[in-house]
Image (cartoon, rainbow, N blue to C red; front, side, top):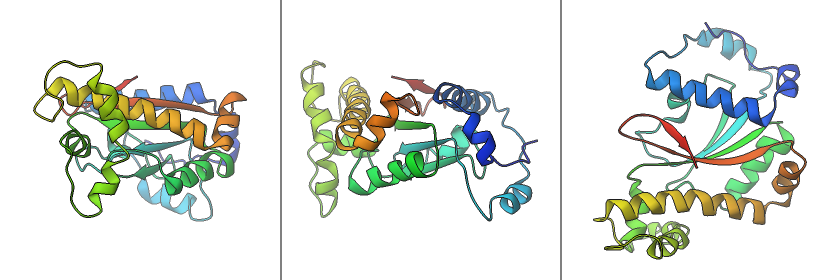
Length: 209
């Protein structure tokens, strides 16, 4: 049973590599329906005065991808930033910088997912209120996929959508490094890693890119 929250001392011993391994092991437990039992009351009590999460995950808002659940993480384990289409903006970048530079997290995981509605909408050129501006962040991935996948460049082409999901994760990581000198320096020094993955709605598995 998990009944002990991560402390600053424990966090300081972690490396980006073993944090990534830990998240992937948690995902495998989820896939196998063998999630760890958790004493939430104990974790709540221990984290009242502080938190020392090991990672921050930038994910989509999709209700089918509850991040802590699919990675089998508990209270105090990870930060989660969520926006439709799992892209970066100024507020997300600030949140990632806080997570790593201030709070000591060792890993940034950009997590896309299969059949992403925001990606599909971007592929179809949807325009609707504030959604239009949101989808503009995904359009670079759409354009990149047009050179890589044959057939229709819209949501009716499953291969095109899948490639755009992957490209959106990869381009988001590139822009995080470009737009955040803080995170780039931490990664260059080996203090953190910035990685990407895609969650399968069919299997529940996270595949790294």
